[in-house]
Length: 317
Length: 281
Image 1 (cartoon, rainbow over the protein chains, first blue to last red):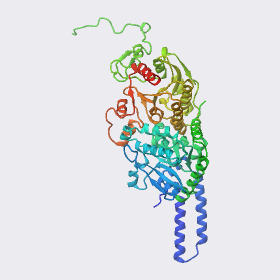
Image 2 (image 1 turned 90 degrees about the horizontal axis):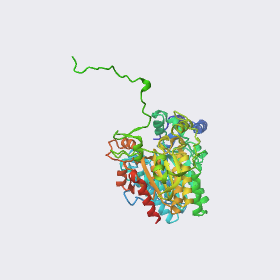
Image 3 (image 1 turned 180 degrees about the horizontal axis):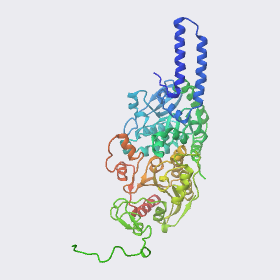
Image 4 (image 1 turned 45 degrees about the vertical axis):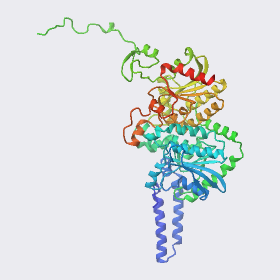
């Protein structure tokens, strides 16, 4: 069953009405085409109305929508199933919150990596809610290094509420693992594209988030802290999450304006969570255009430009 | 009848004749509460004689301890933060910065300087916890980046003294970017084959730990310093039970393989000079 957020309720009502009208049409054999057309038009304009006026907090809610496509679905989608998952960091274990492997993008090999959330309660636990341990980051780095060795571009999908803040994670150097990834990604000789497809929470996101192109899907967020945690620290209460979401300027539009991300990938008009095929199509198109743009530049020029781009992200006087 | 009898009444010294103790003459160890003459504590590099507790100190004290005769040239002294997000929580970010500046006499949470250590040129970036918890914003990123450029230009080693709660929330996404920015610059330093010493002091957490503080050719720390990605409170809430003794302290981090060595403040200069000599000779 699809989940509807409170601000999406009017859409659900219209959708239900359409279904009902269709049923009546079938039952009574009366032509309801006009009525249905009218309702569909209404649904379209209502969708546009709701999605064009989203508040930052509503976008945060959408980024976490349980019906959104997750990393694996994007990978399977853009490769048309021609993907082989590769496991393990060759050291401690295989982190289920981070996935990766080679895939074929219209015949070209690409290394895909990303945080993976679970699709149901059991899987959410299995995937540790998309919160990787150090092994996850180290697996990601191992795969990126392999991609570099065989001269294959890298695409990362970012969707995490944060790196896991557990006891073992600390013991095994969560900080070092993320730091190492950031450092190494900055110097990878192959093109790197990072796409925020859901939640981009802080260091946990940045740990696979350094590339030649860093882009956000429309209804996602990316910042140094989640609005809830920010609220609890700065306002000393969880009640100010809406305000915090506003203040952090964490939406794709704001982040683009601040020059922190390079581009925004449009989602279908009713959001990626209602139209997976549409979302995957847009993502694939974007990846292909970035890869075409990047493939002819020299590795050393790309690295220099990458360092330069990140060096310019900051404001001081 | 009482055994003793007061012959004089109460305190007779008049307020005018009272001798005031000047401020800052005495300091209390924040761990064992022993009271020291402030001068003695300073002479002892702000380490408690009795319990060896290393008091938190700032860039001023570290520069004094490390640079020969306390002489150095400060770099990019006047860099201060902008307010790109027009951030406001219970207070405006700009007001918070101004208030902290006038209270601490600092411009931001880090100072960078070039000087000599045991006769050899060295660039140091040292954080000040007194400035919004040593938080890392655009200014910190830019100052470290420029300090690294200076080290590359002078072909000298580079050192960061970390003492920070992590990224500065009021610069949100931009402060996150500083982790990547500094890491990129460290790559250039590495390319120039110049040593980078990361010195972790109490506390080093969050985004600082998850970037340049863990990337030293040498990662070294003061004793008993909190070194963490997620702070102990968050970890405790996550796992729902008490944390083992010494969790996330320097000694723990050393045992788990993320530090090269721990050094007492009194030996810091000597030890560091030797390490740098090893890289050079």
